[in-house]
Image 1 (cartoon, rainbow, N blue to C red):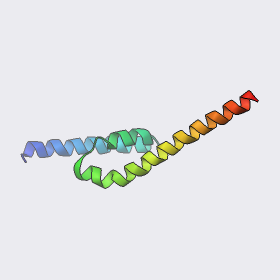
Image 2: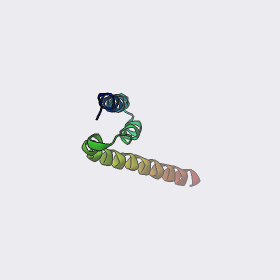
Image 3: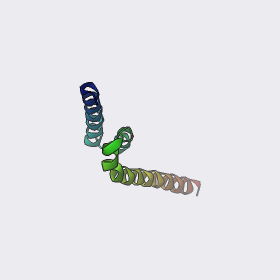
Length: 78
C-alpha cells in the first residue's frame, strides 16, 4: 500500500466518523446509520452490532408510528 493510499484511506475513515459523530450528537440515528453503512472492512465489522440494533430501533419507531396512525384513524371514524 502506498503512502498516498494510506492517507486517503485514513481520510475516508475520518470523514465517516466525523459525520457519524455529528449525527449522533444531534440525535439523528437514521443519518448515523446511513453514514456508517458507507464504511467497510474492520470499521464495518466493529460497528455491525450497533448497525443491527439501530436498524431494529428505527423499525420499531416506524411500527409505532403506523400503529398510532391506525389508532388515530379509528378514533376519528367513530
